Image (cartoon, rainbow, N blue to C red; front, side):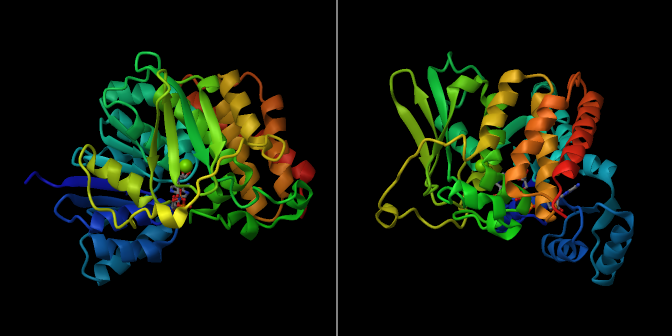
Length: 397
Ligand code: NAD
Ligand code: MG
């Protein structure tokens, strides 16, 4: 019996955090929880700490952290409470940590995820935004830190499973012709485009196949999620934009595919449940029980495929454009998207204005750099300021 892996879960109170802790709790002999983090939701984090007994808990704000520490002490817990961004970096790179689940949403996940990579951890990457924002820096940090990067995003995890174990980010050497990322098409795949003008945040967050956080749910409704995933696939697998295709597959049973030069197409299938990719990455290269229902193909009965409609989903086209443009374009795309989605969720921006804000930000942002971490942070801030001005022009309330 080997010693258990010590795990830090960044974003423990979120949807991926919950699925991760569900899998971990099924295998107490394999995993110990070293740290759990959340931005808010001290009460939820308290419950998780009492159940999983981490050495550290991190909350975004100092006041909330004091309250959490008090509640933990009162409950007889020895979990130590920290707060703020530096504490996230600390628990992501601590010498006693083996693996880090990077499940913070948005650019806020960049610094701790990068720290885990630099410290040579096993990095389980759900936070796709950090790769979109700082792809080259992130991949350098993985290489230089000697980290093992395992994709959690279901599509990338599927591609990872369909590639040879020694795949070295060189499609040609492995005989890979193209990568096909599947997409459900989200809740508005068949909604008349005119009707999209009036959709509400709750309608956008009602995903047909997956239950996820609100930001990624809106990204799925605009298909920006798939756009971010195209960029993510580019950095993870070293494939250029023209060799990463998007296939709409409403059943979400095939999680993605790799086509080889001999015409073979290798796919990974399963019920849409994030515990599958999470368990795969947690135990890699072994396999563990994840609590996921067996796939009943007779119940699924039919797998269908459609070409994405770029007029219905302009955000997908914007993401391809940003990837082709290179430089800071993907960072601008990501920052403008985060701002536009937050404004949409707050009822301040129409659904069909989201892509307009991102398009305008890509047009207006000039001379930005992503050469260093400081440059990435400055470019992200500048792109957000531009996006906020564009949101203001289109604001509904
Ligand atoms: P979520 O909104 O449910 O949870 C986000 C977590 O991040 C929470 O614990 C929250 O407290 C924390 N957080 C938010 N803002 C923070 C900040 N500024 N600083 C520190 N922590 C902060 O989101 P989710 O659906 O679990 O998604 C998490 C990440 O995983 C995203 O990058 C998303 O794109 C990716 N992902 C999610 C799914 C899914 O099925 N939910 C699938 C694939 C990829
Ligand atoms: Mg995905």
